[in-house]
Image 1 (cartoon, one colour):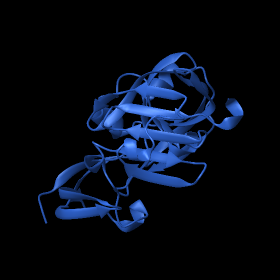
Image 2 (cartoon, rainbow, N blue to C red):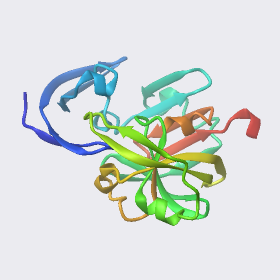
Image 3 (cartoon, one colour):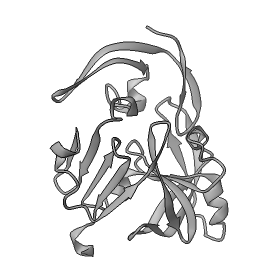
Length: 220
């Protein structure tokens, strides 16, 4: 056991117990001296979550064609070959933030959130897209067990450099995670797995601050 710490989730903030972990082995790699918050299994759906503190010098590859997720250095995962779009991001609290994206013409900061199924927009983005119709509400669940209500909306087109995602389903909510990342006041989006599956592959390279996209074959 270690000290208690404040954990910021998508639906709220909560003080949680933490433990010191001497070693985690992930494949052939090992990570040492970690402090981890204790969460209830029913809220995270697994025995644990690999956090950004273990990924800062790594690349995370999600290959949706093969149904594969891999963590290693960029060279071991094939380098940058085959990716049509490479975006350089800025770093904030360990996350990589793409600052030059646009949703229906609105400049929006985008963070890839592999822990979210659906994409989540902040209230500043909702206000900027206020002319769009809303399509009911949904409930967002946090790893702390907290919940928050969100309004459902759509962005007709999300553009990041030369790529475009159409009809992006967005849950708009006052999620504390935006403020924790310094993204509370300007339009921002947590891009979830539902939209990431539109690509054949996505690689998040924390070491070089680059996010790489392999466009689906039908669009080439």
